[in-house]
Length: 65
Image (cartoon, rainbow, N blue to C red):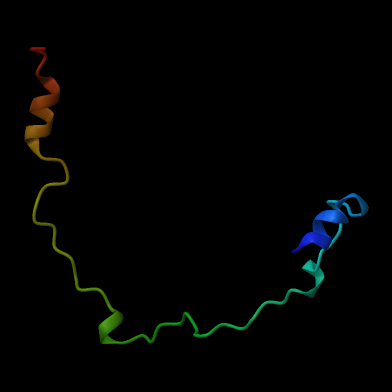
């Protein structure tokens, strides 16, 4: 984009392609597939705490504000 672009701006429109029709999409550099194996499997999860602790309910019931 140089002075010719600026000087000829009255002869073009916002609807002009301006080279957009020459763009192309390149192929992927890598695939996104994961190999199913031991490294991609989750460990079994054990819940160690209650989902909502009892102290949260007691704080919600306090009305000493």
